[in-house]
Image: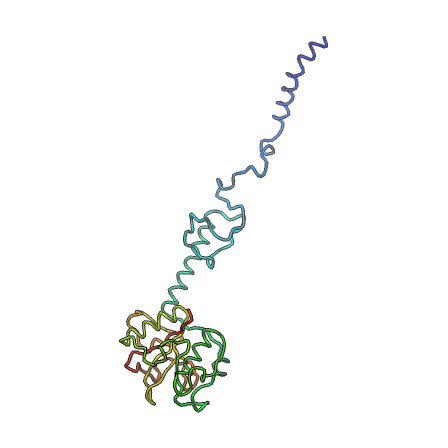
Amino acid sequence: MASHMRSLLPALATTLSLALLAAIPLQAMAAPHAEEPHARGIATENITSLSPSLTPNVEPSTSVIIEKSSTLEQVRALYEEKQAALAASTAAQRTDKVLSYDPALIAQIGNQSSGGHTVCCPGYACAYGDAVLTGQARDHSYYGCGCCTWPGWGGGNSSFRSLGSDAAVLREAYDEIAAGRPTVMHVSGPYGEHWICLIGYQGVADPDALTLDNFIALDPSNGQEVVASYRYVPYGDACQHVSELR
């Protein structure tokens, strides 16, 4: 009898196990981590951008935060919204842009009217340009008081760095400002030849068809931010200096 009972134990154990399994709900048998959330279109982790397959050209500045409960459709919509905002910002900067600067630095540098240096406009213009680029104020005399030697502004110690045409000068100024760098341009005004620091552009429809109406400048005669055409026109020699800081 004992031997017969021992022979039945494996069968009884199997039957009992099957009975217990049948009594457990199916959802309780699946471990939480065994779900396949991506099959349901659910993002399960905080990420800073979409997958590379969806965003081959995403820059760090366009990264977005995705919540754990975001659906794939929400992720796509947020990405497209960020891309549209970036495209709008880029388009706006193609038509209007003014480089930022600290007015206190410009006041510290001074100007021709307050300083009495009536022939030092190129030195002041270069000092303004470097203040925009570096956030530091240099005295205009650093650039050559009375005879500008253009340190850091090219030209081989000559004021005649000519590009051949006014259109080429203005296009170069546009490209430099778009890249974050001011230029120093030779112009003519009510007192003859003059140099101004171009720091911005406005209302640009065609970068190859520009006038001084399209440019914002810092004017060494008074240290003010002005529309470049308010009393100036290109001098006629197509001269302009650009910073060596790249």
